[in-house]
Length: 251
Ligand code: OAD
Image 1 (spheres, rainbow, N blue to C red):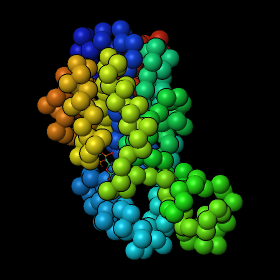
Image 2 (tube, protein in one colour):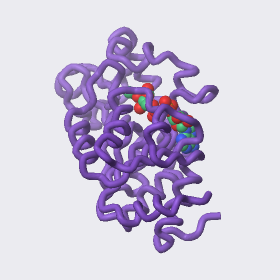
Image 3 (cartoon, rainbow, N blue to C red):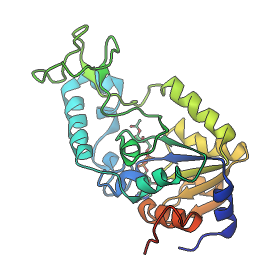
């Protein structure tokens, strides 16, 4: 892929780059997205039955088991070239912040040091009653396992529909937008609020917005650069073109 010279210059001179990611970034690691027509999770399952506090109250066993299945998929997955290219940018950009909607922890696994998890992390269970973090001593006899402090049921540490985002994560993400020179929007359908408003907010703050996605999304119209393709292919090429010293040539 050939990249705009002005974009490459903006990347090289950036002091702070923000990288906003969605499920598409982990697709090439074998983790299904939510809304892709054939393979997306919401094409096969109903979010109302699995990803709301009401669903958990109604049927905690089904919800717990669905997340246990997703955890298994994620445990077998490793970072792909997109996660690795983002982590490599850290070597050349004075400050780089990843703002992710993904709960799989793959950015950190790839070596990204500064990751804001807007929708939580699937590995960080906590008690649905007293909200204490799980401590690993809960045992496996109960489904869901019970909290060792109060006996309540553990739930996965993700944000469900109808719940607020972690306040500190949202504040940190908003702060980053005010200072980042370039804002990447990668692998997200940009349909779930409030996260979906971040690219628009970034543009209104005067940031250079770069969209990477094989499909069109509503954010194409606000991005100054739309790079159409898979993140695991486009990102390594882009990093190589901007900073050949950190990335060996990609075919
Ligand atoms: P979606 O499944 O809605 O969107 C995935 C996006 O990734 C689509 O725009 C695809 O075109 C794109 N995509 C697919 N493969 C790609 C690839 N190899 N490289 C780059 N892009 C690719 O996922 P999200 O936008 O992340 O929330 O969904 C947002 C939220 O909705 C999730 O965090 C989750 C879900 O319900 C909660 O669970 C609270």
